[in-house]
Amino acid sequence: MIRDLNVAKRTEDIGFYAGFVGASFMFGRCLTSTAWGIAADRIGRKPVVMFGIFSVVVFNTLFGLSVNYWMAIATRFLLGALNGLLGPIKAYAIEVCRPEHEALALSLVSTAWGIGLIIGPALGGYLALPAENFPNIFSPDSFFGRFPYFLPCLCTSVFAVVVLISCIWMPETLHKHKVSENENQSIEALEAHLIDPKEKVEESGSLGTKKKSLFKNWPLMSSIIIYCIFSFHDMAYTEVFSLWAESDKKYGGLSLSSEDVGQVLAVTGASLLVYQLFLYPRINKVLGPTNSSRIAAILCIPILFAYPYMTYLSEPGLSIVLNIASVIKNNLSVTIITGTFILQNNAVPQDQRGAANGLSMTGMSFFKAVAPAGAGIVFSWAQKRQHGFFFPGDQMVFFLLNVIELLGLILTFKPFLAVPEQYNRN
Image (cartoon, rainbow, N blue to C red; front, top):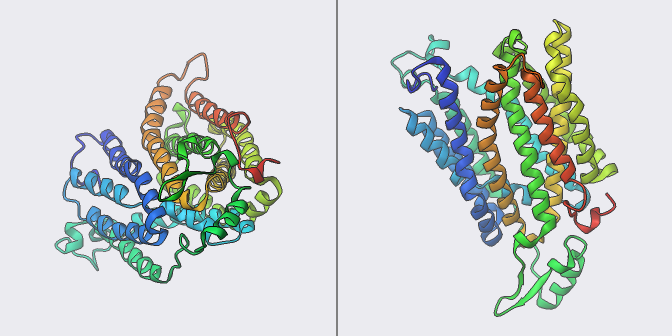
């Protein structure tokens, strides 16, 4: 799409411009996620979710109709800014089920990403440029010939319309429990195991009670910081993986085609569905979110260390080892992220859960906007030092990824990470 918008003067500049289109969505989401979370705490989860889906219908359609680079940037930015969906959905997942099913509920949120990882790229690749790929159906002079990237966007928007209509029957969870002032004391007593008693309630004028600032809730803030670090690592890894796999073997890459990389990602996406639905809830039940995250981070380090040495393998061994490593690495990453989801949502009472998830999304979106650019710069620098003394070539890239992983791992221990009371045994 960037190529056809004629903004890049050279082919090698396409990735530079495409990076800004991707970052614009995350930048927009970074600016507004906290505000959407606060809105979800005040007016309910359902209105914010429905408006977010509506914004997908509008701005995803307009993105497919982009006639120049800046229109593409603007529509992606507005989609990120006006789509406050993810934070309230995580809060909703916790609230709609019993405590023993929290791990499954939040793993379903992550599973949605796995589904998108499979369907999204396939849909975009198959339906883009329909006049070229399906000349018997779409003529070059037709509407889809004039806007060659509108068809996949239209299909996504139509699907979003169906989801939006189905949300009419989605029950609201924020105001499900209405209690009197006397009953409220009993509810707060039951909540005591979820949050630090020091962080409970303070007396306040006409409002009766007022929760302390989220920024003073260290169990929440520590888990958000850890979540942002691992999100940065995952986004940088995703960026590096494709660049490394497709780069030439003389530069330490694997010399794979885009189709080969897509196949690896599809297999990984399919494994995420199985793992999140059937394995992770059992692992979380046995180990808890904190220990499962620590073990996953520890296991990621030797796997990443082994990546640069795959360049010495040949087919079919290379494909087998690469697929296994990718499946294990991504499932371990999802284990960590889902564990931090659970800790965040259990560190606050219900009426602060939307704002807490919005704050989490703000930090995560900022790190995910920075990570691709940073990873690309480091990768280009590393490929120029093939004969360096200390971790030459791509070994330096994976070494730095391991440094970030190790930092996240260290922060999962006390005194940095403060966990909600019910997880202290972990």
